[in-house]
Length: 463
Image 1 (cartoon, rainbow, N blue to C red):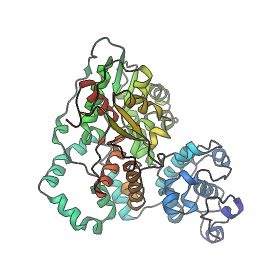
Image 2 (cartoon, rainbow, N blue to C red):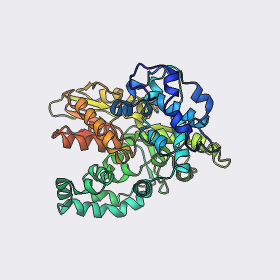
Image 3 (cartoon, one colour):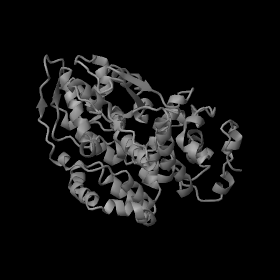
Image 4 (cartoon, one colour):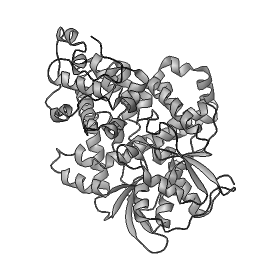
């Protein structure tokens, strides 16, 4: 018996009967003993179905097993020997974006984020991938978390764009014929600015005026190279508001990409490196301006909970982490703000990044900051909590689902009539810019820190 696609289905018997007879006739391969999804969390799901309406994969695919509730049933079936961890079952875990909308929606407080993280680690350890899947994942996890490697490729990307090869590749669609996933990766490539290669921040940047706080700043990987102006704006906004900024040279990736995709050992290694890079900085807070990175930085204590040497260090590190918007709203702005439009009036639609909204519960603070810019009016899109489809590397691994979500997100943002979009996550920004271009919409997109920086420095964005 197949699972019902009806969002109102709440009959556990119908769910428990999913393909079980067929699966029982096969060899059962369950989770290994290394931190499988916790039974007590699985049991906390009461199968109410509230998660279905906010789950992006369920909204697009329309299958119960591609919803949080269905996946939890599948986890339980694998744990109890009623289903096998194999190619058929693991694909339903792969379709999860990890957006955490279900965590915000769930009336029972089910910690689905912990369940899917544990399950993905099990899949990566125990379920063989096809050759094509292995290659694309190898490329992603050996490139994006390492800014030094990305930096080497940046001139090649720049040449690729400048000689017109990118236009030819996109016009012919040849890359999509070779590999839809490689085509998806290429499709979000932003315009390359080679100045980011040689960007070198001082170790310590003094505050403007009286010192209020000493803060560390994390530069990120993609953010550092593809959105360098965002980091520069972040530093200027912090120093303009009385912060001494510390930027350790040894910092690397925050571990968000591997952590979200079950690459457990890589995530642990990167987390340890990040902790060590800030070990002797004596900062009051550690500031991050990318939503996905911030969520991972705040759960280092979970990632390293079994590491006796780093467990306490991770707890202390995570306790200091603040999203830059969260931090500025907390300490309150002291710098003077001026209009950033020649018309004085400017309408902005703020796009909630999932790992900021659902993972860190930060929603009001960015809006409060933007409203302090003179002349700014905020618009709210419909379906604001629906994921844009970026979800770390999801738009490269599951491009069809991601494209449908990206199309919906851009249409909803555009329909507000706002003059520009504010987005606080590099992955979301790349995804939204891609679909703005596809839909031939020219609405500009900025990080909130860029807008605050312009306001502090008196720069007009249309001037």
